[in-house]
Image 1 (cartoon, rainbow, N blue to C red):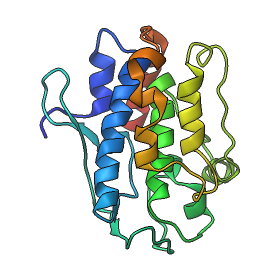
Image 2: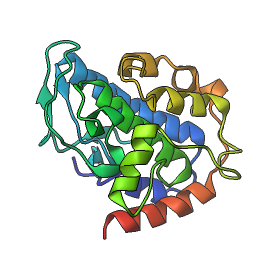
Image 3: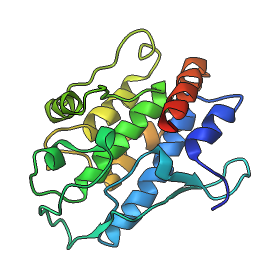
Image 4: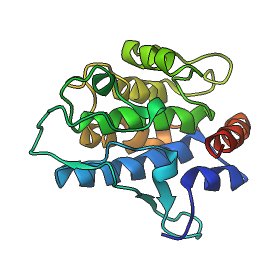
Length: 208
């Protein structure tokens, strides 16, 4: 894995669209699905752990850092302890409820939101307030930056950022979502310069 971080690669591109974001999340979901089929929950999906296989254009996205990963039996849910990165934690982990594979889909929802606008759905300098936001599922799609995002993209985010883990979309279901499976006709190909600009700032903040 020699291509560096996916998010750093995106900001170096001359062209980046919703369709590109769809392709990125598809590769992430395919990797997550593979893990889940093997009975592995990553628990720490975030931009730092999304790496490119090489520096070649169109290189595959790989999941990294399985240090917090756990093994589960089928759809098993249990309290496996508090683990993850604040902005990507799911409501069930914050509630100290039993959890399992759906925590990775919540994190994918946060990642997809960032891929589309360059900033996260949940943000507060105060960690307690951040956790209250997450537990309440208190995010929205503010104007103007979300006005140019297709309803299908927002629908997939909503299905990933569903508070109830039993109602949250699975990796297999997400890969069948029209925004991914019918990308060429559904996802917008408009260049998103504001997203790239915001992602540059987001990347810089992550490195602090």
